[in-house]
Image 1 (tube, rainbow, N blue to C red):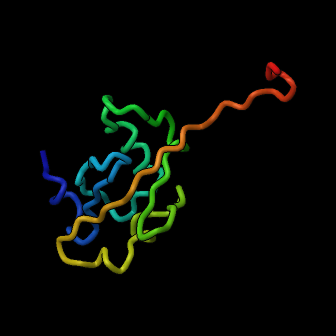
Image 2 (image 1 turned 180 degrees about the vertical axis):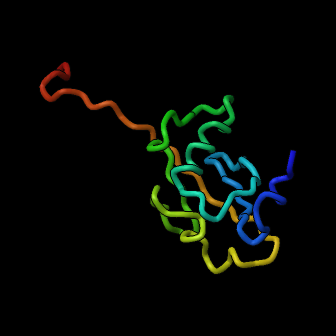
Length: 112
């Protein structure tokens, strides 16, 4: 089996870790710079520690923040990298905010 570094040129890989709300991390993991934010969110959900009180169920429950900006699902890692991401051998930390989707209640059906 080939190592991931042999499959893709080194410059196309970006090392990311995801900082969760309680200060713990997922990663660091290497991703292709062409990976989308939506792909990262799916990976975060699959790697999410099961012992946390708040657990995202779908990718829309997760917001990724890098350099103070909420990242769009269609953006690639290459598009989201800040100038600080150009540091050699640096791991980029993205912050994860979980906002579970609220189920909407029908108007007028709430008990008074």
